[in-house]
Image 1 (cartoon, one colour):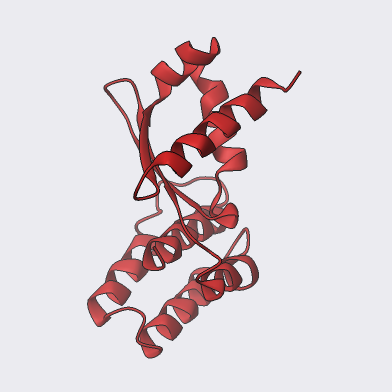
Image 2 (cartoon, rainbow, N blue to C red):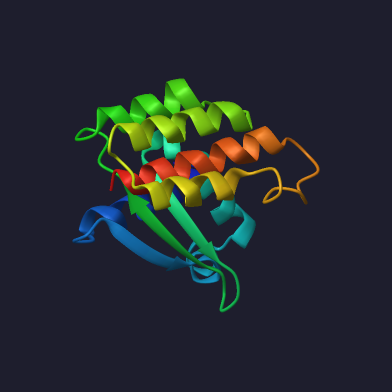
Amino acid sequence: MPRLSNLIERFIKEMLNEAEDGIIEIGRNEMAQRFGCAPSQINYVLTTRFTPYNGYYIESRRGGGGYIKIMKIAFNEEPKARSLIKEAVGDSITKNKAYHIIKGLREQGMITEREEAIMKASIEDTALSEVNIDRNKLRADILKNMILVLFR
C-alpha cells in the first residue's frame, strides 16, 4: 500500500494535470481532512516533492485555512531555467553571487532594469535582516522562485 505522502503527491499532480493553466489552489486544512492527516503532513509533501528543482512554484497564504497556490513550470521548454537553478543558484548563495546572476539575466534581456532592482531588493541583507539562521539558503530559495516565475 502506498505511503500517505505518495497518495497526497499523486492527488496534487493529478489536479495539476487537469488544470488548464497548470495552476491550482488548494486549502491546506481541506486536504488534511480529505486524507485524514495533520496539515503539517501536507506541508511536508509540498516542501519535499514540489520544489523549484522539480519545476514547481508555490505561494502560500496564511489565514482562511491556509490556501496554497501551486504552479507547474514546464522545464522541458526552458532548460536554461533548470540549469540556472541547479548549477548557478544551488542550495545556498551569497548576495554577491546572486547579484551576478541577476545582472546576467538583465544583460541577456530576460528581465527589465526595474525587475533587476526588485529582485536585488528582495534578497538584500536588509530585507533578510530578521533571519537568524542560514540567510544564504533563504536567499537561494527566494532567487530560485523568482527565476521560476520568469520562465512560466
